[in-house]
Image (cartoon, rainbow, N blue to C red; front, top):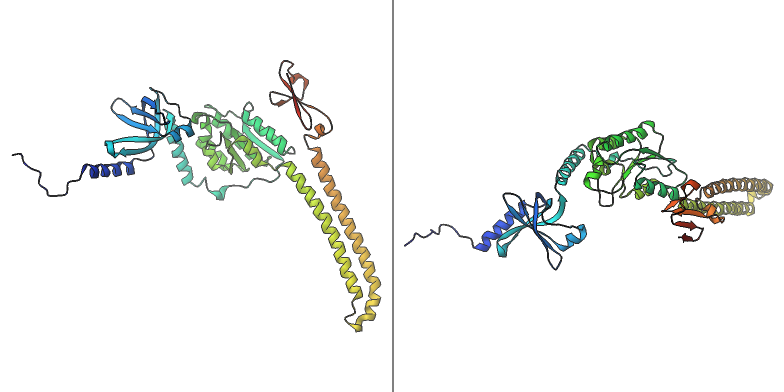
Length: 397
């Protein structure tokens, strides 16, 4: 008869052993990255993607749930060399493990991502991200410096937004590449240019969206340290809402888009106009109220008979009070006129800066391809033309 196993200890069941394996793997292999080739890619009827990640020596079953597919727009095919990230999960009923994927990138991006995380951790440990170093943005900037490529849509978005919100500001562009091997040194020079001359009130560094490789110049350590050393308040606006760069963490303010950077940098001229109007009315009401208050107070003092002993003295003082009333009224009215004149001058100045004032007077603005055609050489007879009046637009074929 074959030897029997001595029952010197409790022998676990399959379920118990699998549970221990599940606990061990899932606790120690979460939020991991792994690189390999995608194969046997299949999408189920309910939208989940199942595939195998393999290399020359092993295979790893993977699944991407439908919610992740819809959110990330993942389009996976067989043969792609990819880096995936996620959590390892053990499916006890089948005794198998699989990777629950939450991230898919082309191979090569993983190394950049690793470099990103390493530099981020290094600079954070040095304190470059601390709020104590963040400089406040000016409320009414007169000059705005922009470091970006003059050919990018990002600069056009910034400039058009500034023209609408705060046309009083002067925009100064430092042209720098925002992609490629020369981009980081040029961005550094642009930041140092504005910082050393100290002739602008705020600096914006920006570019539009792109891949991690496209945005990489803004993840270079040299750029991060130039941002930190900048003497001028600086806004970093790199990519789209979901994109984060090292410069975003170091900058005084991070904007999700170039347009948002222009909004953060300036007040709205229309809101300022309304504020001036409100202050004008408040000054007018307060001044009239003060005049009436002093009139009532002086009148009350003149008529007071609480102390009969001083009645005779008050009779003599009455004429002095009237003279004081006249002087006070004259002084108050003069002060009111001066304040009203100053506010009227400010309101006229703001009205002159209104870019739509010519339209309100009956002029027409010509647009082509979303651009305001200001000069005859810029007009393309073959292109679609749009005419803008004060209250409407008409498109001509």
